[in-house]
Image 1 (spheres, rainbow, N blue to C red):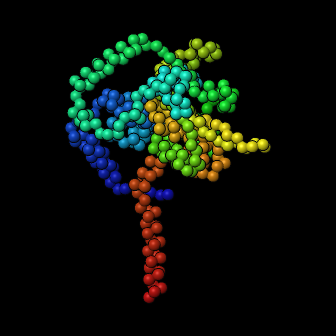
Image 2 (cartoon, one colour):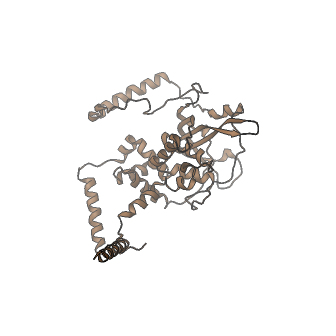
Image 3 (cartoon, rainbow, N blue to C red):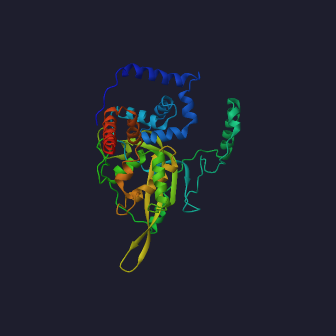
Length: 369
């Protein structure tokens, strides 16, 4: 497709950028990065997940620069990510070593270690809180002081507790298949273009980078009727997972790995009932759908677990089981970019179509005459 240059475009573009800055500043308020970091946790988590870059400050900067536009903030952060050198690869993260902040199961009332509700909007009333209109720093400090004192009273000692996976207890009963660990290096779609049929590592990476709303919509579509995959959430866990890298000289001793920090993750394992046909009868078994993403991003992780299980069964005749349909349409930068390119000049192609329509119309008129 050919495009023609717009004469005088540079001057017009510079004027547009000045106007953009004016619109951001005309309210004469400067939004501090610290304010975004401390008050927009969910937005930051979504931007980091879709950009596949875990950096809170840069995510907050992208949000400020994009004036709250998710798609633009993700675009900015991904563009920055593409300029960064890959210095090393981290060791495989074992989510059982996660410092859990929230852990629930919809499959069992009682789970080893108990349910931990943590911080969530799930149990709040969806009513506007008008007291926030006049919230003051003094009130905030008083509430924080009282709450921290309550925590110290109820939990005088900070004890580090690790929680086992719910599915492991079912595996011990023989209700879930156990697999040999696959320690082959995963495929990296940021280094090598996505190819079909895709490997599971490519599918999972694409899903976790996918646009939150699109992943949720496709997961909902499968749940509602396009495949009718109806899982039960075995476990949702949110917490901080430690990250280690191997030393420069590999000795094979894991104790020598270097701890470089931690990242907040949301991990979901969903139990999906499937029917297996044997020679004797039809049996019901369970498969696991897996979802994981940066930050506290539970809806996306659950939807991801649904799509993961769907894509494991490409033989099903539903769009949510078609990996090309799913994986090529959930990327926020790709989809936004292609839709937005329609704003660019299409003068030549449109004029060509317009001339064709005029020719047909004129030919029809002459024929009538």
